[in-house]
Image (cartoon, rainbow, N blue to C red; front, side):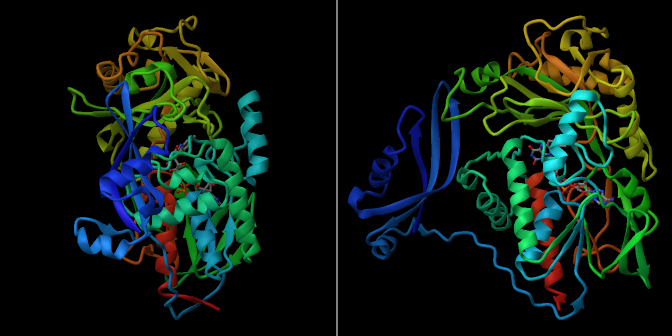
Length: 523
Ligand SMILES: Cc1cc2nc3c(=O)[nH]c(=O)nc-3n(C[C@H](O)[C@H](O)[C@H](O)COP(=O)(O)OP(=O)(O)OC[C@H]3O[C@@H](n4cnc5c(N)ncnc54)[C@H](O)[C@@H]3O)c2cc1C
C-alpha cells in the first residue's frame, strides 16, 4: 500500500468522491485502485461555513511496485504494529496491579496477553455495580468513598467524554490502545479520526469486555480491595497488604492508583521518593452547543462533523495562564466527588454527544506559590477548595450565572440557558471558593475567550464548581527502567505524574509492562 496525503472532500460530498480524487491526484485510472483505507481524517474549518474533511489514505494499487519506482515522492505505507518480545530471565510471582483505570487496565491486558496471569486489585466496584452506585449518588447525594466517579473499575475516565487525543507522540503504542478499544466494542473510526472520542455509554461495555478477556487468559480481579500497605524487605517489594489485613505475596506491583487516591499517597510516603507537582484549578462553564458549533463551523449542526469542541488559552496580566480543559461537546457537568464533605466537578458525554449543552473547565495554573512547599500542600489545597465548594453549595454542586460570578453575587434563576448536570445543585457565590488572584484570573480568561467564541462570556452562561483535579498534585519518582526506589514497584499512569488522560495513561501502562517483561520472565 502507498501513503497519500491531502485528499479532500467537502462535508456536502459523499465519501465515494474520494476514489475519483485519488485517481486524479495519482494520475491513474480509477480501475487501477484496488482499495483504500483511511489512516487519518481531520477537519479544515478555516473557510467556514465551507468545511472540508482532509484525508491521509493508504492505497492499494494494481501495479504498486512500478508506481513507486516511477514516483519517488510517494512512499510505502507501513502499518504501526506493537510487537512485544519477552527477553527477561528473572522468575517472578504473579504480578499485582493496583487500580483498574486506563493505566492499570492496559498493563493487566498486556500482561495477560503475554501469558502472565496478573492479579488486579481495585478499591471500587465492578463497572456494572459502579454505574448503579454513581447514579444513586447523583440522585441522592449519598457518596460511596470507594466507588464513585473517580474510583471503581475503569478508573476516572469511565464517566467521561472518552476523548482519546493525547499530547504524547507514540503512534505505535497509541495504535495498540485504539485497536484494543475497537476489538472490545469501540467505533472503528477512532483509528483515524483526528479527535477520537468514545463516550461514557460505550466505555462501560468496553471496560467489562476487556476484563472478561483478562480473566479468560488466567488473570484475576479483586474488587472492593484497597491497597493499604506495602511489604518490603531489603529495599525490595515482597508483597502488598490489602484492606488493612490480608497480604498478597508478589515481587512485581504496578501502582496505577490515579490522581485522587489521596489516602494511598500518604501511605506511600513512608517508602517512596515523591515530589509535589503543579496543576490547575477552576470552574466548569456551560453554553448552548449550537452556539459553539456556529462559532467553530459557521453552522448550527452537521451529522458528519458532529458537535464542535474548542481549546482556548490566555495569559493573564498577573502572569498566570488560564485555559479550557476537558471540553465535553453535548455533555453533562458531573458531581465527581470522592471524599465526604468535599465536592469536585468534572464533565462527561455520551457517544452521541447530544445533551444540547457544551461544557468545559476553565482553569488557572497553580504552583507552590499558591499552596506551599511541602509535599502534600498541593493535595491539601485541592481538599480546601473542595471543602469550600461543598459548604457553599450545602452539599450540592454550587452553580452561578457568569454575570453573578463576575459581580460577586448569588444567582436567583437561570435565564436563557438551562444546565445539564448529573447531581444535585444549588446557586451560590462561587467567588467564595478561591483566593482573589484565582477569581481575577478566571474572569480575565473568560472575558478573553469571549473574543474567540462570542457566547463564551455571555452573562447567562452557567458556571459550576469546583474543578481542582486537573492532574495529580504528586509525582512518584522512577528510574530509567520505570521502577521506583523500591525494587519491583512500578509507579504508573496519571497518579504517579506520567499521564494526563485516558490514552496517555494507557500508553504508560504498556510502557511499564514492556520494561518488566524485558527484565523478568514469568514462570
Ligand atoms: C469525569 C471525568 C472525565 C474525564 N474525561 C476525560 C476524557 O474525556 N479524556 C481523557 O483523556 N481523560 C479524561 N479524564 C481523565 C482520565 O480519566 C484520567 O486521566 C485517567 O483515567 C487516568 O488513568 P489512570 O489509570 O492513571 O488512573 P485512574 O483512571 O484514576 O484509575 C485509578 C484506579 O485506581 C484505583 N485505586 C486508587 N487507589 C487504590 C488503592 N489504594 N487500592 C486499590 N485501587 C485503588 C481507583 O479506584 C481507580 O479505579 C476524565 C476524568 C474524569 C474524572
